[in-house]
Amino acid sequence: MNNKPIIVWFRRDLRLGDHPALTKAVNQGCPVIPVFIHDEVVENHGAAPKWRLGLSVENLSREIADKGSKLILRRGNAADVLKGLAKDTNAQAVYWSMAYDPDAVKRDKAVKKSLEDMEVETKVFRGHLLFEPTSVETNTGGFYKVFTPMWKSVRNRDVADLIAAPSDIPAPDQWPVSDEIKDWSMGGDMQRGRDIVAQYVCVGESAATSRLGNFIGNWINDYQTNRDLPWQPGTSKLSENLTYGEISPRSCWHAGQRAMQEGKKGAETFLKELVWREFAYHLVHHTPRIIDDNWREDWDAFPWNEDERKAEVKAWKQGRTGIQFVDAALREMYVTGHMHNRGRMIVASYLTKHLLCHWKIGLNWFEDCLIDWDPASNAMGWQWSAGSGPDATPYFRVFNPVTQLDKFDKNREYVSTWIAEGRKNPAKQALQYFDAIPKQWKMSPEDDYPDPVVKVDEGRKAALSAYENRSF
View 1 (cartoon, rainbow, N blue to C red):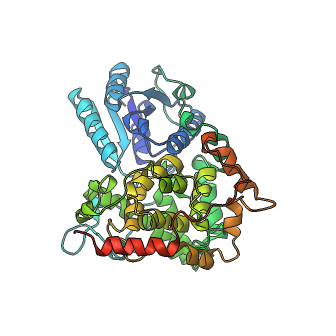
View 2 (view 1 turned 45 degrees about the vertical axis):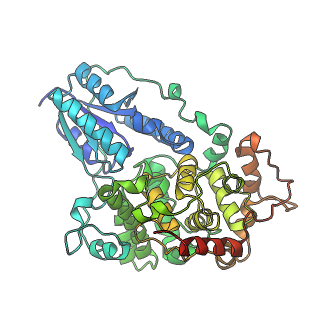
View 3 (view 1 turned 90 degrees about the vertical axis):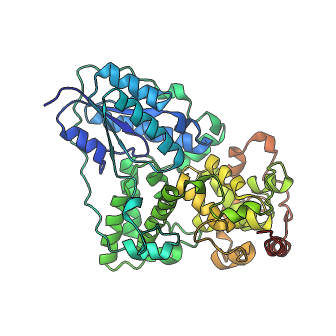
């Protein structure tokens, strides 16, 4: 038994169960030093994701303490912090879970080189995905650019069993100095919206496991239908927990498989949604430009509006477009940190097609406001909606937010939940929106509801005209 410690660097894997890196370290029989770093990647997070990440780190710290250990917190450049920690603790190795987005990959390469220059062993473990991008190929050896063939290729694959959380985590004789998370002010940019959104979060491994169990037990049977109804609690909302790794995708997969074997009708659709998340990460791995640039490079010539100061963009961000489905979805996001998936498609289509605004405006707004923000899913979702991405909705398919509302919110239950203007007794959630938004927006529930900034028919015609006259 080697008494030199192993550092386990936690990132988007903030759990103890089904955690290959942690389990491997504990099984070595030497002291383990769990670490979280507020590093250069975390520093660039938007307001809501950074705040929500901080809640997860605090929860993990308590769970690790219950195992007789301690989560060491440090702030700074990841390579510099880990190099210093390894030197100060005489660590023999640093373990972490694999990441795939370009910023994280760049960071991890620098960390690996820095530690190996010190002759400190590094090991990288799987765990954020079900299927590694290099393990899924088309018949010709390339990667999948269309979702359905990828789904068919992996749906019957074996997925490894879950790994139990360690009963205890061996502690070193002496702990390195740790920061206090309160000093990081991770929720500072949330301002007054923080207390509102806090009422809707579901933080930590135990809460995530309960959320999964409740969904499988009560909602998955009707998932295929109810997932499209924004007024129904018909989705799992596990995206919040998956993005921080509070639950593993394998936990969700095995639960979905059991539900399918039990004959629950919506189980296969749930499994498809897990693979849709995989699809996003596979695309990011193989074509990292999807994060920042048009995946279809010929779209670089499309005449997007990129001016965020335009009145239409401001109205879109504030949920004041005059289009009820769009406004309700954007307000849901501002109050809860979530947005229903049907709403995401509608608001993205309206911004990129009816308003002809660059998808990056919406991508950045979501990155600032969503507590389930995920770099891969956010990028793929926006490019899918705009028409510039892989397996994208064709540009000529412009969602009509009025007919979509008639189809998926016929009795206007969703709209009445989130829009207060013009109602004698607005819903609690609709009023919370005005408590969450910046005061300088100068909005009130007593305001008149606005006329459309761009009418549905006019926006569709403009979008199709721009597409037909494109120069690419």
